[in-house]
Image (cartoon, rainbow over all chains, first blue to last red; front, side, top):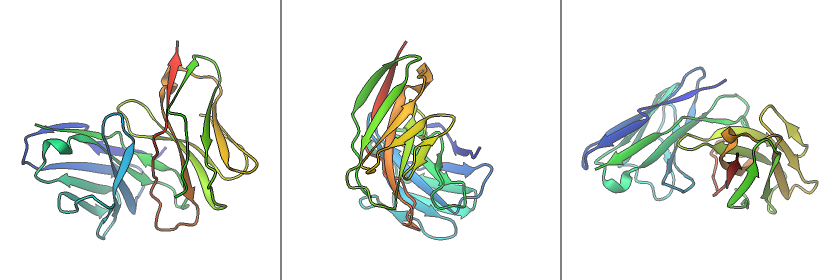
Length: 117
Length: 113
């Protein structure tokens, strides 16, 4: 089945530094990928929609200059958390649609747990 | 997207069937009903989806009410590995270019050994 791989699975960084998270579709091409954030005991909140070869679409309230998204190929999207602060500590999850039919299920990565100290 | 309502939590005994309800009284004619689940410390996993007819796959069954205002995810024989948060999500089949999934709070399913 379709696999979405995220890397790293865990990262700890110091306040003020930047962190890059990779999301790869391993056996399919994804023109669109989605980035979510999840705080403990809470549901997933969509941050942005990543489109291959064009600018990402951010949800209301998400700072595009802080959460930089690059979708340079059909199998790779990256999320960079710039100048990270402790409040950015969260579980970040990406997803992509594998099938060509619009209503095909989305496949999710296993998430990246970011801790900012 | 239309809203769904699920119980916050449910418990079930291992090896027994589990029925997870979802209410979606404002569902539109083109909304598909999708179910995903999220195991602890993992990303969500697709379970099943349907439009009007009941659906079965290797993971679960989806029973959709005749008026489509509610649905039930059925796990036929729960195992400890089924302990997860289950999300019922409506997705407009014709909202091209807007494929995102909007997650609610879901139902936290606990399986009792």
